[in-house]
Amino acid sequence: PVVNSSSSRKMRIGVKAEKKITYDGGAYDCETLIVDPISGNLLLITKELNGATVFRIEKEDFWDGSSKSVTAVHAGRIPTAHAISAGDISTDGQKIILRNEYLGWLWHNSFQTPELTLTRINPNPIMVRGDKQNKNGEAIAFHPNRTHYYSVSEGKNQPVYLFRLPQ
Image (cartoon, one colour):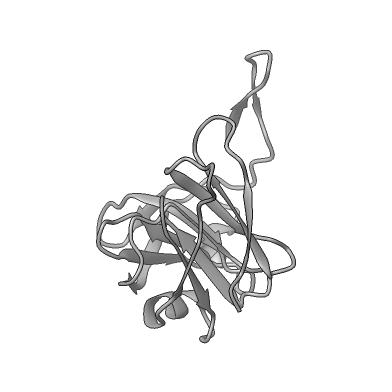
């Protein structure tokens, strides 16, 4: 990745691997990339108006040290969530959250892989917007204690909200 510094110079920052990713079955709009903390696999979740598609890239295929392209393999459909813009998996792998601009969903990982949980279990709805946030929700992340999560919207001077996870 390239970042702009305050002096408008470009500098490279710790690139370990750069891969071209293609999707199994065509092109997709994807804004959500999460890493399974147990397996190390990458999950890409599409932004679609009617549900979402989960793609998986095996850890070994991505972190193999080469620059060859890799194919994200179709791992299932999420029928209950749509227009996904962000997601996270808790550090113990037991909870998964996804969000769009207005809504959020929480899954308790009952299977061995997050993709099976996302595609086979109905999630619980969660709040993702505070009173002073813009509508365009763009990020969500678990607090390290796994009892709370953070949410923020796109735009200038947006507050970061901390929510308690439902029991």
